Length: 367
Image 1 (cartoon, rainbow, N blue to C red):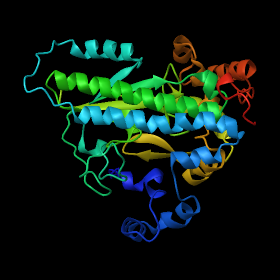
Image 2 (image 1 turned 180 degrees about the vertical axis):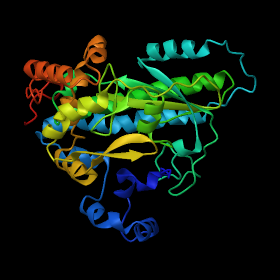
Image 3 (image 1 turned 90 degrees about the vertical axis):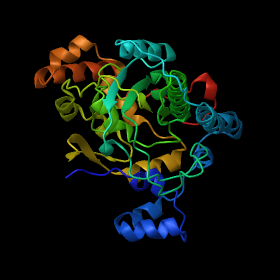
């Protein structure tokens, strides 16, 4: 049986619901199993994260604009897209346009791109929030338009210099920078396609009509790891995902298998290092894709306590340290070889490769 994705069922939608409102009462009448744990962590905003940061006032004052500006930039990109009409005359594109597009996205800052032929099952059923990026008619519970043919999916790698400071402020700064970069690349691609005469819409942290991990898996950009993040063969899970949906037809890519399932079974450093023990080893299948059980409430509780989105799991994954592709192929589905690679990783970087020394941008923050 196919699972229908619904943004209203995501944690970030649920914790934004306010007690005593119609959406709150309606949702928990249908899904009472979420109410108690959701109420314990209810509330989410960038200001909430900022208030939770463990740092001196002058350090926090420097960081606040970074938290606030990310929303401003992304809203601007969506506004720019909304004001750019689709050209009524379509440009005739060459057969190799997919290759052209891949090189273009690389120049924008996305080193890998994949294509998915969209199905109804790829889309969320309905919107689960309303931000400045949403149109006036795209309110909570509104059915999502799913008439695009193709998804252009891409990755943006994150700087491990920052991620290795997780769960401290540096990790959050890099996460926000990556979200901004994803939106920028998405907007540039969307506007480009619109000028060529093809309708297009980019996805972002502020506006989502499709869950990106299943989409990126179908696009062949990686496999799903124990953290339920996409793990890219080259950049690991220290990445952020982006997508542009369009009515342009392009040749589709397909899922890849580089032996991640057995690697995760043998490694589990993300599970071992998780401060809240949120990551679980037990697997579950969702629409034919392998995912893992995960305690989203304990994970989000740490977010609210630290003022960052943690990132220890990104920091822990050996693939985030760019294992040589030939080594990945060599160790595929071989326990002894996998164990040897993990042993070398731990000897080189440590079981938890955290750097406690603050970067100059936040020097003075407590650890």
